[in-house]
Structures are given as structure tokens and as C-alpha cells.
Amino acid sequence: MIGIPLVIILAIVAVYAMRWGLASLDLSFTGTQEMIDNLTLGYKLEQQMKAFQMFKDAGYTEQKVKLYMPLNAPGETAQTLLQTIDCIRELYDMFGRDHVLP
Image (tube, rainbow, N blue to C red; front, side, top):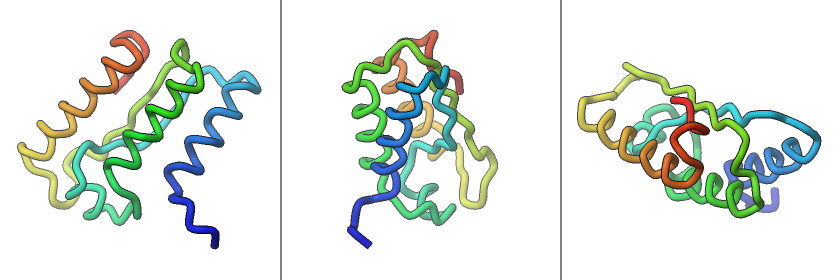
């Protein structure tokens, strides 16, 4: 294993997929480290958001970003949901409201 976080690898794969004509990026998404850990996803929130930034920096700003959120997952609270909404707002700032579909 070369030690590259999975979320970074997936971001790179997504960039290549867009070059090949993929119209949207569909991802499971949560906006708190607590929920990422509860769901045993194996990465850090910062890595997740950096992957989105890499996607944008690569010039992919016109495709749809579809977020699939595990609402009411084990450990989900009103506070974690509000934090996820804050992260979605960051994605709105990155890609534009019309391109992010929660």
C-alpha cells in the first residue's frame, strides 16, 4: 500500500471520469468527522473537502455534484446535521448552488 488516502484516489478517478464524458459526480456525503467515524468510512473530513477542491481546481465546475447523505445514521444528531449543512454551503460556494444537489 502506498499510503494515499482513498478519498484522494477517488478524486483523481473522478477527474479522469469527467474527461471521458461523465456528466456528474455522485458521492456519499456527510459533513462531520464524527459521522465519518461512525460510518467507518476511513478518511478525514478535511480530506473529503480537499478532494472536492481538487476536483474544482482541475476545472470541473459545470458538472453536477450529487450528494447522497445517510440521514438518521447511527449517531446522527441535530448538531451533526447542521454541520453537514454548513459543509454543503461550502460546496455551493465552490461549485455554485445549481451544480450541487444534496
